[in-house]
Image (cartoon, rainbow, N blue to C red; front, side, top):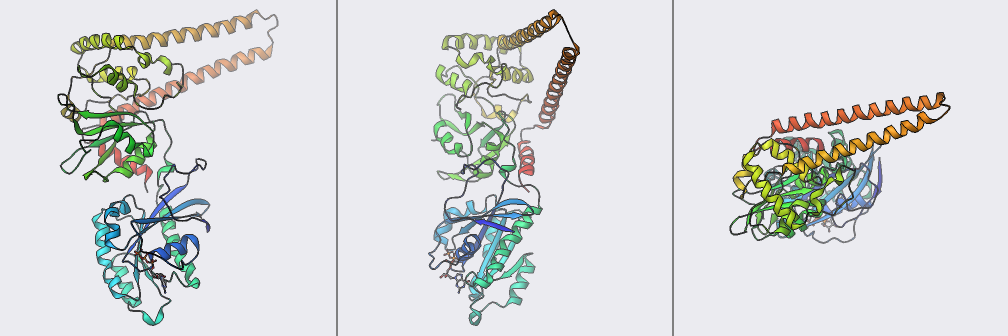
Length: 487
Ligand SMILES: Nc1nc2c(ncn2[C@@H]2O[C@H](COP(=O)(O)OP(=O)(O)OP(=O)(O)O)[C@@H](O)[C@H]2O)c(=O)[nH]1
């Protein structure tokens, strides 16, 4: 069942390797227990197949990895060898438990205190809201020291039963027991595989330009006020490119309000960020992040300088070439400052005329073709936080977009009729060309209907999303994302 082994080092991030994009699931398994029970040796035995001559107390965490094959599927077992000593684990505990898929509790069969302390380790684990679905096993190590055994198997078995865990009694040192050590992790991997689809590599790399990450603020945390947009981008670009950021600032003082909206280049990055950043501490403040459907660009206010306005409009991501001709409609992309001012005026005029939020969202979509914004209902929570006037979008931009579409359509028609004209001028129009024409018509109608299906699909999806969006429906949405990315 098992294949290649891995070594220690940094946690292999989902994008850290240059290996081709394959669907490899990663199971994060943490090994917990008192210091000196043999956690490091067990992980060495499993990942490297050896018993280390010498070990030192683990500081923070060590990572080891092994790729195994279960029923034809390659799975990466990522083993987190945690520190047993309180002083070496304090700052890391939250990281251990975040998005963990399975837990291995280890005690030393020759040391009763390491067994009685298990209660404390289980409490710690429960205190970090590890879901009940996460499999846990109990491992009694150092069974080779037969004469020194203090913890009888019957006692350990009773404890394991009481906590709904499997018990493994083994030795990292004794090579004859290596199969048993392997079974600990393989048993967990098999159980995890049997559960539903896991982890990030399964998530489609969709250009989810509308997907945003919301860094919220509550009584216990939020972004440290001193962080600038650049700081936030530095931290959050670990999991993907940030293409736009809206760090909400006080209108008068310009100081950060401690919350922010980020737009990643794809949905996968947003999911990764939610899973990895939620609950971390930055400068003593706990970060809370949510994955919500739509990125909201900053609201324009009068005292913003032109550079900032243009940056808000363009985003901060690297420019990618437009996907299609309609993408190149971005008139705003290189709007000179004066034009921007004029637009601002007419925008304000239009704002008086129309206060319908749906319309606003629709026109925003046209104003920011690079960051497509889905239509959605106005989120009152956003208005509560955000300062400054509502942004409404210029009707001329809408007209411009539709005019361009019309022109494009006309050009396409012209090209088609030219092609047809050429064909009719041919003297001998045989069966082949007739067939070609029929095929062309078929293709065209196919294209047409698929486009219609696509737009209908998008519309109904948008309708569904907007109908379920409430100020706090983010959580539901995030839950559904998790459903698809976690077991
Ligand atoms: N006899 C015997 N000794 C073992 C076994 N496993 C580990 N040891 C020894 O136990 C000591 C501690 O092992 P480690 O693996 O470093 O213990 P740990 O739980 O990782 O300790 P911390 O990193 O401090 O949390 C070392 O001297 C190992 O050689 C085993 O199966 N049998």
